[in-house]
Amino acid sequence: MVRCISVLGSTGSIGRQSLAAAERLGIPVCALSAQRSVKLLEEQARRFSPRLAAVYDADAARALRIALADTETKVVSGPEGLVEATAIAESDCVVTAVSGSVGLKPTLAAIDAGKRIALANKETLVCAGELVMARAQARGSEIIPVDSEHSAIFQSLGSRLRAPHLKRILLTASGGPFRGMTRAETYHKTPAEAVAHPNWSMGAKISVDSATMMNKGLEFIEAMRLFGVTPEQITVLIHPQSVVHSAVEFCDGSVVAQMAVPDMGLPIQYALTFPDRAPTGTAPLDLFSAGSLQFFEPDMENTPCLALAIDAARRGGTAPAVLSAANEAAVALFLQGEIPFGKIYECVAAALDSIETGTADTLDTILAADALARNYVLRNH
Ligand code: MG
Image 1 (cartoon, rainbow, N blue to C red):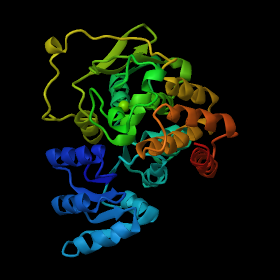
Image 2 (image 1 turned 180 degrees about the horizontal axis):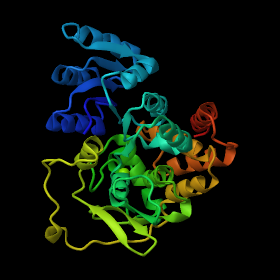
Image 3 (image 1 turned 90 degrees about the vertical axis):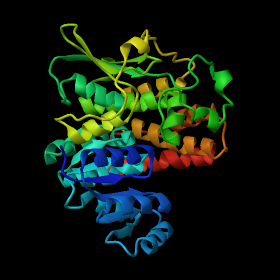
């Protein structure tokens, strides 16, 4: 079990659940960070007494500094503040629960400091997976996936990222709130409809990604990077019950799956207790009441974002970075009411068509591709 954690993105859904896990397990919290949610961050700081609280937004940081003036918590701001919260000496584990490619630099800082990464920021591995995994190996930093599917794959592999006899990954997907609908039927769906997920309670960005199935596409690339497999070694299965969180097939035909009630508390906690386990306090899985478990092939025609992501995975280089950044920009526009739901796919497809992609061997190349893709979507939607 880890000794002390830093939580990046502590006011989001995964961040709040990470703090709940830390409290349950008696793990101290030495740094918190958020974009700008001053009120909740103040509450968290008073409850966990971290040495550091990082707020990305400068005005929000000033407000928090005043609010926490009577405490021992030091308030820092900006991208440097995020890196400071990551590299803080007391922590041996960083939970990367920020959403989007803003998580990339702090994740690399945590790796350079040799800490365990409880990785909940999939965009980092999507846009810079090869770089991040190579750096983690060189620095001896453990990467433990928090994404429920990747935690399931990790557990099914015997709690390791590399398994010599692994043949195939079976990546499960609930299908999201619009499963069974055509593109025409979902084109004008509202943000409120898109974020109403049937099985999982999550933040807005990832909920929209689940509705477009881009989330599964990003997870496809995340799985390639984490477990060192090719696109041909990953099969996506629609599994509406969200009981099997993913599975692996070995060369002898043996399939090992991980099952549990759909609750992020478990994969979050496992990333902190690994290689041990502890009770979570959530309801146990009751297979009698779960009833039948179903598995279907994905409908690529009506969830084109998934097809687009798999295509970007095959292209490799900076194509996944362009895909992920264009998607982030398009999802933000959709949540602001600027574009219809169906336009998210069109924006990402257009960015991938228009932006030249190349090798993704340096951080600068990846960040440049990311910026080009965002600007393209903002200019051309
Ligand atoms: Mg997931």
